[in-house]
Length: 403
Image 1 (cartoon, helix red, strand yellow):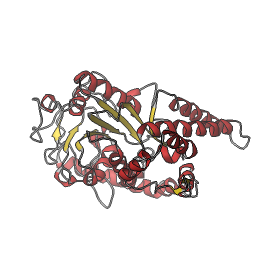
Image 2 (cartoon, rainbow, N blue to C red):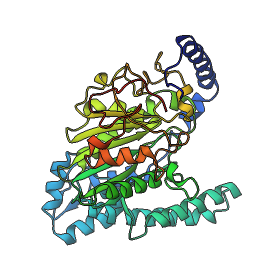
Image 3 (cartoon, rainbow, N blue to C red):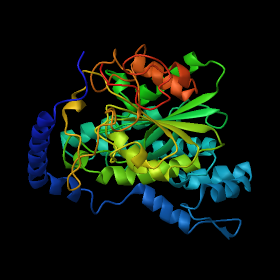
């Protein structure tokens, strides 16, 4: 078996090599990665601006970014007809409004997705676009059509750029326990779900986790959110080596968590760069977040679990075939993401993942990692399999970690 711990000399050489690569990327790709985001009008922002000037029954509408409790009270004061009218008039605003009833958000997002589908349908026949542009429009139209199906529960949606989206599996209103899957790089509206390698995409991860939780504890009412509602880094470039995307994602993640209905406990499952998002978000998370589990993590922007400043239990896992173990676990001048979450010094509860394969295999049905996630999600902590053997992992690090 191969230990996750490597010699100090090897780590130094990896760190130096990685820094050279990152600085080259900064010089060659950093500017283009940022500049193309400027000067684009967001359909969501347009709708939010309209909301700000809107009225109902002669009264101004509340601030769209107000507290979830205030917005919940506002929607609760309306009739079903009035709520439906607002969803139809401002679909993107209502569909992304933390505090709005989740069923109303689902309905609003179906309207918004249909409108976005129509935009892409027109782009398919726009003579100003190249064949590549037409093909992209067709892919996006097909994806929006799929997401808009009546049986899908889209909690948030933004068509701008590569797109952002979140989907719910289960009944969020009645759930006793809620799980949230936070994915990593190259996550957008087109990669939100895949036919091949389905468990490497947010929908496949969340659906697999939902099924595993129901199998682990059939009498526990659970719901799982596939949360791809942040702008993830595109590829392993500059954005993936810094916390820039994670900082914005952390704000959005915490806003979503505060807007969840009810008081059920919440467990986060943060994969790859998603663990950077969760690490940055940790110290501002609401108290209902009971667990933060990271898989294939490049670091959490902290030197230890205690440094995350959270009351949530912190779990970590990595399989022996995951290439992420070869990156330098350090942070220098904003580059890199800090200590290795599965190292003994970090202090997380380290779970086994011996039969997972590669960087994207943690949510594959039948794997030990997925079974552990399901136990955490349903509160079955005593049956979580620790790395190195044993069950429970409730006393933090359980020994030298090996696959």
